[in-house]
Length: 242
Image (spheres, rainbow, N blue to C red):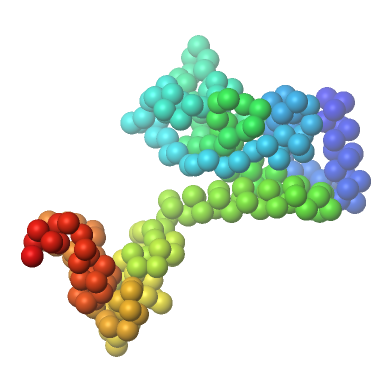
């Protein structure tokens, strides 16, 4: 408890805020997260944070997925698994919050297994940039982590434009133009937004959402006929075709 009070005082001094203001900025889970990170990383919170690197996000559905299978296939540490006599196993953040659904998985230099940290906890830790503003390396590390988290969370609600790859297309949105379900507005052209420019020559236009072939679903042409031929004319299957 004394260590928590000491760290709160440290943050108050660094941020020049009152106890009330500090409690509004950070939840109590920050301090349990800090203690776990110190235990994993050899006793120093900031140096342990520097040893974190974002790996991936795995979606866990308690109705269809098995905790043991996901833990095994992703090499997740036992510290992230909560199990009691009366409650089924579930995934738990380092801060102690349980029943996680979106598992943000991290590597840590001092841990052979991977760690799960909840998005709320990560966003709490991001606020520490204000306290350690002079630590440019730490701030950069936190920026990289939060960017990776937000990009992966956006995959839950958005999908990439088929042509440019930008993650801007809303999955559950009824667009006025049907091709906007596959392409962003910047990649579509033509009066009715029915075409795209060839991805290679950038001059010729081809119909948007034009299937590559009749049996391949969800894959569309992105090159005009001439550019496609130039790309594939030396392929063995093309030679056999001719």
